[in-house]
Amino acid sequence: MAKTTNNVRVGLVDDHSLMLSALALLVDSMDGFVTAWTCDDPRKAVSKIEEDAPDVLVVDLSMPERSGLELIKDVGALRKDMPVLVLSMMDETLYAQRVLKAGARGYVMKEASNEQLEAALRRVVSGGIAVSPSMAERMIEAYSTGVEMSDQGFLDRLTDREFEVFQLVGECNTGNQIAEALGISPKTVDVHKSKIRSKLELNQGDSLSAFAIRWVETQRLTRSGDSRQ
Image (tube, rainbow, N blue to C red; front, top):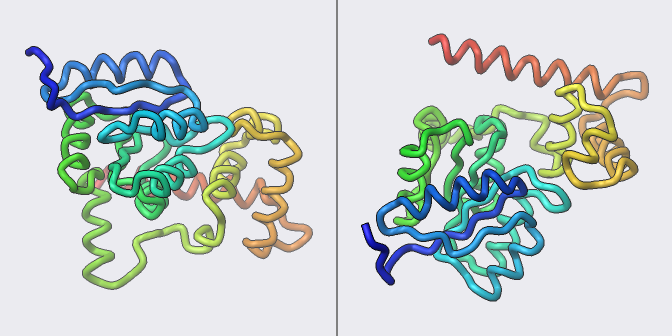
């Protein structure tokens, strides 16, 4: 179907060029949508938004130099009315709440189907919130009971970047691997680890790695149990 001048213009931000190309093709195949531009650097994305603001932004969560969470906050400061949809490999149960609090309107896992992504995109453009049915159920339950939705407890003390470091530590990544994954220096990783230890009130003899690994494994076992129900 031929595109019209009334198409919803979509900005795409992801540090993987193949993913960007595939997303652009998918968006351009959707009726009523067109790719405004693509960007592989969250810092450059801010400039692109200032120069040519799209109608909606689709962003990855884990990117070097500046995370998707930070970009979402930047977008909120620049264009508060611009809906943002996160498309990430990161587990929704761990990040959706942080993403929504940062100002995004939805969260889709990269393993989702093209149809699910299109439905989520249409939902956020229309002013809705797009999350998986299980996450939506948790949000509704939290609202009805007045109980905080997050099951992270003590981890709520961590900043978004500290939480990213904590999870990567729990996945047995070295300091250098974490630095490379987040686009920061190993020294900065050490600073984050020190702050995490302090915020989690770990004793001098306690291992942050062991603590984080146990937490990650507990999350995996919990999700595995939920999927069998």
